[in-house]
Amino acid sequence: MQQYFIDEELYIGKKYIFNAEQKHHAYNVVRLDNEIVRLVYNSKAYLAKAYMDNGIFVGEVFEVDNNINELANDIVLAMALIRKEKFELVIQKATELGVTKIIPFISERCIVQNKKDKSDRYKTIALEAAQQCKRNIIPDIMEPIPFKKLIDYKKDKNFIAYEKIHDEANNLLNKYQKGNDCLIVIGPEGGFSEKEVEYLIENKFDEISLGNRILRAETAAIYACSIIGEIMGAKK
Image 1 (cartoon, one colour):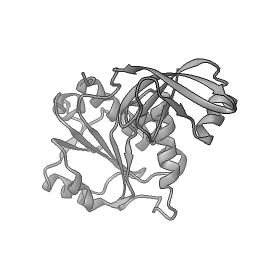
Image 2: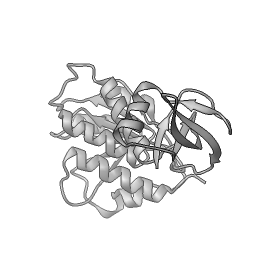
Image 3: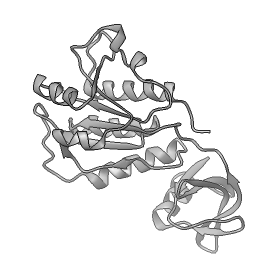
């Protein structure tokens, strides 16, 4: 079943007219013809029969979809800027894993320094990933911020993944507690400086381990979101 996020309110019996981009995807790319689609407006989902009607591609709403395909709490991923293709992979996979907000940031050892505005590209990746995995919301992708601004986005639990921490007590599996919103900070390819780690610890962040192996930045982000989401569980 294909899903589309839309910008107008729905109700049973309404015929939603697909915009040009949605029409092209539905009719020309995936070739829908009298098939069921999922339409989402303002986090509420509906089922509709999609078909061509005198040259206009429509979705005729017939049922509310009460499935809420979201996690029980918020995961905010603060991700250091890394190489383009890897950062885009993180956006895609974090979206699939249920993250609610992604905060790109610039730290001391970032190779990438945000020379170009890629916000539209990032938002498109998040939109497509959210539609693919049938989420009820699209994650918020923020503009890149300086490292020290991360403390402005603290949640119930705030973690910094640090490769020098290996003890079992500080493993993410043992540190995250179900029922809490969470901010997880993942560093760039070169890791964090000790000064950066100290700054976040002073601001009540917990150092956490992602295991004994040193993970690539994009792998660390995906792994951390997977662990937190699994413990957190689904929204009911």
